[in-house]
Structure formats: structure tokens, C-alpha cells
Amino acid sequence: MSKPKMFEKPIGVKDYLPEAVRKLRQIERDVLACMRGWGYEQIITPTLEYYDTVGVQSSTSDQKLYKLLNNRGTTLVLRSDMTAPIARVVSSLLKEAEFPLRLSYHSNVFRSIEEEAGRDTEFYQTGVEFVGDSSADADAEVVALAIASLKAAGVERFKIAIGHVGFLNGLLGEALPGRTEEQEQLKACLLGRDYVGYRDELRKLSLDEPVRRELEGILRLRGGSEICDQALKLNLDAIARESIGHLCQIWDALKAYGVCEHVLIDLTMIGDFSYYTGMTFEAYAADLGFPVASGGRYDNLLAQFGRPAAATGFALKTTRILELLGAGTEEEEDRTLIVYDSEGRGEALAEAQRLRGEGVMVVTERAEELTAELKEAEGRANRAFAYKGARYSALRSYIGGNSKGGGRG
Amino acid sequence: MSGAVKDVLKVAMPKGRIYKQALKLFREAGIPIPGDFDDTRKLIIEQPEANMEFIMAKPVDVPTYVEYGVADIGIVGKDVLMEEDKDVYELLDLQIAKCRMSVIGLPDWKPTIHPRVATKYPNVASAYFRERGQQVEVIKLNGSIELAPLIGLADRIVDMVETGQTLRENGLVEMESIFGITSRLIANRVSYRMKNDSIQSLCDRLQETIAAKV
Image 1 (tube, each protein chain N blue to C red):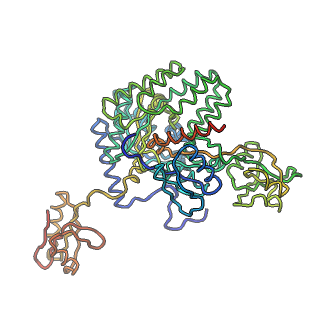
Image 2: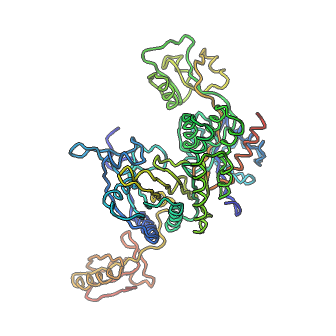
Image 3: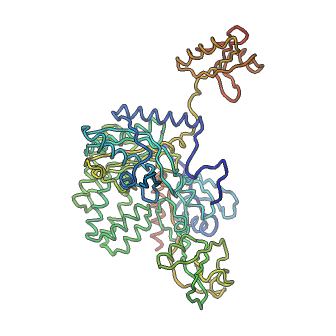
């Protein structure tokens, strides 16, 4: 690669200018407040982790991890998600803390060589982990909280698709007993969203017609709770049956939350993350081509850190939500300009401090006289005005020995 | 999801050869597409009766439009899908624009020490030869691929073969067939869920029409 030009930054990272940051912070604040309302307390973990611990256990494939060496030659990673670091904390610092634990976070995470479109190398996630409860109600709580969080962020039209890892394993295990290679092949097609390939593979397997039709039929298993009933009519092993039962229970709980309008069951969904063990879900917003949240149950991860426990959670892709909502905020913040000369300085700065104490944004500027521009602003009844590229809602002048202006304050 | 006013379905259509066959298939499936737009230069064609909007794209760009969600669904050849490797749903084999991806060379081809393969599909070609344990230099060309072996730029080419007419006329032979190609219906990850009703019903109608033909 040629030497970068001075304005360039590495591919996949972004600068956020004030307008965007204001919106990002607003989303972050509203979502975290929502999560707090459900009893989830925020934690912060380091950006750097060991490759051999969090790096290996994270769901991110090895070539997508940012690896670096510390001064002792130990391999570190930039965290690629928050689930593995939180599992580490729960198993170490919070080892004595009683289950269940409800934790939330807002963090930047890093993934390299993201060839899929719309993915950044560094991006923000806001999410929760609910550790130590394996019930369907815990899964439903997490899904319902994801819905509440999307609403809190200001996303209006969205859908959540829920699936279960156990269903497909059980179904394929029953239809193709012992033929793990073929099972993997079919799963790979579904994971790659290649339905044509899935149907072709099925045809090649020379299965009995009813079995083939049944396996092809799952491509249509998408909808409300009736999907579970349809699924139960298929030839399933005990695990798959249990999975569907679990989904039914989650659905019932979501009905009690009153959020089923946002939810659809999709039994072809396979979580992209290897560590999922049960229910998985993804959230989609209208007008954005990429999912805005994903989550699921991962009951085996904590054992890797030495404290076996059931866990479920999700992450909102906060930066994508920002992209969806646009950077514009609902209202401009109140901003007051105070101009002063040497004589009025003491009074002006004291007033500025007083206003700041009230939460007003105050900008002060020394000037020997009021410019024509400011005089005009001062004279106008509606005091909103622009000055040197910024918008102000009020002007106060401490020039020439007398204080003028006011507005609100 | 159903009820209310249904959102318009944005369809990325590949300009050229596939487009005509796709239009024919849509009409056979009873989707109301009046008029004849074969020669139009418009880039966006509204289809109010079908509640669709056609986005006329260069075929190789169709998966990109769909992946980013600026088009909900698209029609594209398997050759492009294999080459571009985009994260989209591949819903249906439309069984139109049938052809195949093949390795082509001169009839007297012999293995060389530094094999060079010219192609419009560098990813497909690399993957194919790697799988067969051959290290080859892949040369990306944008057209008239058949020239490469004739003038000694490459000893073989990887390209789409429909009738084999061009090959015969230039004294080339099809050495191996890599995979069969037909056009596919693809969908964006989010649209497939957010507009599931309309996409699924379109998919069903097309599937019935295709099944009736076979």
C-alpha cells in the first residue's frame, strides 16, 4: 500500500463530529437508562485482553481478531465483543456475587478484515448479559429488554426474529442419523442463507420424499406461535422437542410483556456466533439493510472461565442505530454567549459560572466593543442568532461598564 | 405485518440478457408488469400495479445493492453470486439464463510450469484451482476473455459458456465444467424479515411457475 495521505485514517474506523456525538450519547444514555430500569448495572472492561483467554473464547474468528504483542511478547487482542470479557469478570472479580447477575455495557469493539458490507473495524455496542438463569423467562426478559431498548433509542419500526439452535440439530439428527457430514453441509447452507443450495443438497441426498419435503418445509417455518405447533408435528428428537417447548414458553412470556407484535419465530435462523447454545435472535429495522441487534443464550461460555453458569444477552449495534436515525437531534441545546471587556470581566465570568451551575451552556468571549453583528442580535426580540459559526439562544454583554441583554437565565 | 399499506418492493434488475427472461417469468407468474421497457434508458422504473420498483443495475452490482438494502430483492446470475460472495439470502433458482462456468483452453493444451489463467471471475478461478491443488497466476480481464489463450497472455481461461459458439469460432475447447449457472432470486437480510409477506408470496408464485415448466 502507498503511504497514507495526512487526512487518511485506517479503513473501518470513524471520526464522530459534535452533532453525531450528541446523538450517539443521547442514544447511549436513553438505552442505558432503560436497561437500568430493568435492574441492569453498567460495567466497564478493558479494551485490551489476552489472546489466550478472551481472544480464544470470543465468537470472533481468529483472522478477524486484532492481535498485538505487549512488551513481553504476550499476544493481546482488542476486544471483539463484550460477552467474553463479561464472562471473565463474572468468573473472577464477581466470583462471589450471587446469581443471577444483570450487567449492561456500552463499549467500542474491534474486528478486522470485515469484508461484509456495512461493518466497521471499530464500532459501538450497547448491551446486557443476564447470567445465572436458564429459564425461558430469562430469555424472554432479554428479548423484551431488547425491544424496550430499541424503542428507547428511538427506532420505530423493527422486528425481532427468534430461533433456537437446538431445533435444527435435532431435526437433522433425526432425519439423517449418523450422517454428520451431510448435516453440517445443510447447516452451512442455512448459515450462508443459501436456500437454493439447501434444496439442492436435499435433492442429492436421495431421501424418502416425505422426509425431503419436511426438511424443505422448514424454510417456511417463520411467523407467530403457530410455527411452534407446526414444528412439533415434524419428526423431532427429544432435544428438538425441548427446544420448541422452550420457544413456546418464551413466546408466552413475551405475550405477557405485550410485545409479540414485534416478534416472529424463525426456525431456520442459526446464530452466526459459535457460542450460542439455545435461543438466538436478531433485530431488524425498516430502512436499514443490516441487523441492528443480535443476541442469544450461551450456556457453555462461562465454564471456559471456570464458573459454569447459564447466560443470555444481546448487543445493540449502536453505531448502526445512529446511522438509521441520522445525526440531527430533536432540539438544539440552549447556548448563551457572554461578551465582556476588561472592566466587565469579573461580573461576566461570575454570571457565566452561575448560569453553568443551572445547566446552561455558556460561551464567553472578550471583546472591546460590541460588533455590529452582535448589536443587531442584541436588539432583536427573538434572541436566537448565529455568531462565528455557532447558534446561540441568548446574548449578554458586559461591555462599557454596563451589563445588557439577558434572555432566559 | 400484513394489513395497512404494503411497502413497495424494490427489485434490483440486471440490465441486459437476464432482464428480458426475468420479465417474461414475472409475467408468467401473473405479476402485473404492463408495457415494454426493454429499450428504456430509465434507471428506476416504477411498477405501481405490482407494487414494485425496478432498479436497473449492472448485473455484477446487483448483490451489492441487495446487501446494503437499497434494493430489497434482486435477480442475478449464480456466476456473480459466486464471485462477489455477498451476505444475502439466495431464495430461489429461477431456472433462466442457463449456462455454465468452465475452464477453457486450446485443444493442444499441456501443463506448463507457470500456469496463467485469465478471467472475469478471479475469485471463482482462484478458489477452483486452489481446491484442485494447483497454484496458478490469475489475470483479471474485463472482456474478450477468449483472446487471452489465442495471443499467449494465458494458457487457460475461466469463463461462462452458454452455447459454446464463441469458443468453436475461435478454436477453443471446454476442458472442465466448474459449476452450472442459472439466475437466482436474492433478498436482503433485513427486507426478508421486514417485508416477509410480499417477498414470500412473490417467491411462491415464481416457484409454482417454475415448477410447472419443468
